Image (cartoon, rainbow, N blue to C red; front, side, top):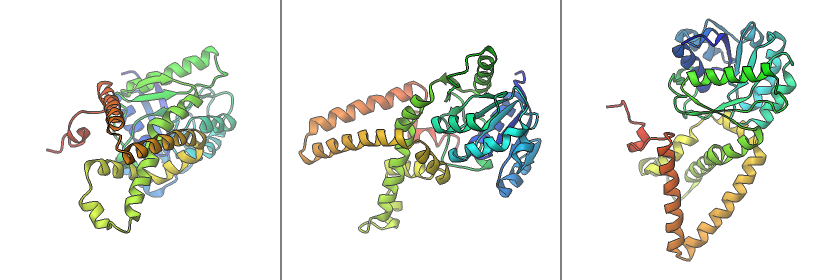
Amino acid sequence: MAVIYPKMAVIGCGLIGSSVIRAAREAGVVGKVSVADASEAHRRRIVELAYADQVTDNIADAVKDADLVVLAVPVLAMGSAAEAAAPALKPGATVTDVGSVKGSVAQAMTKALPQNVFVIPGHPIAGTEHSGPDAGLAELFRNRWVILTPQAGRRDEAYLEATARLADFWRALGANVEQMDETHHDLVLAVTSHLPHLIAYNIVGTAADMEEVTQAEVMKYSAGGFRDFTRIAASDPTMWRDVFVANKDAVLEILGRFTEDLQALSRAIRWGEADKLFDLFTRTREIRRGIIAAGQESAEPNFGRDRGKH
């Protein structure tokens, strides 16, 4: 495949940053790759893995002459990363991100970056519970959605071409690409990602805090549902702390709705309203089947995670 960006700079080389590099290298859509990471241990490992042509702790050095800059740091660090990159960006560069929150991130990026670059916030809806340079997967984005939230006030031809180019880049990595306004994105992700993580953190914490059940029993007798919660709750704590702080309005709105529904479910259980329970479980089962039909999950045992282990 033809090179789309002669030089790509990735700021932060955790799960998503390292996956972007692996996938872009495999697809042949980037030339040189530079990486900036604040962690000395990460930088040493990136050199060992031969991910990049340049590895540094200096963001400005990494982005110099870059055609594409990918900010892959925790959400609350996006603004400072953009500020550090700003003086060294070449005119016409595209700057995007991979954060799970778009409203506050887009605002921070727009404020920090010069007007002669193309700021196109983005969010690949993909990941695992692992983190760090070793967690990267070239196939992470295949058949997953990447949502771009272009700036509402930019409709000039150059900006539209830059957006189309970025969409082509993600498609080359195997992703499906959609555009959405940032406010709607944050509400949708509060439902599909942020609230589920909050529930997982809470239910695993509740199990750990119960005096009537020992921690050894929790581990020994954990059923499949609880094990899935622990997988989600093992996600990077810094990243998810930032997500909930940055997207608090949308999360609190959806959390309020969820609390009301949970209270209704509690009443149905208390009063033995079996039909209500059956109707809910039937409806939610169809949603699960729809996700599988859409190719966003596997119907294999253990959701296909054991594939390749035997």
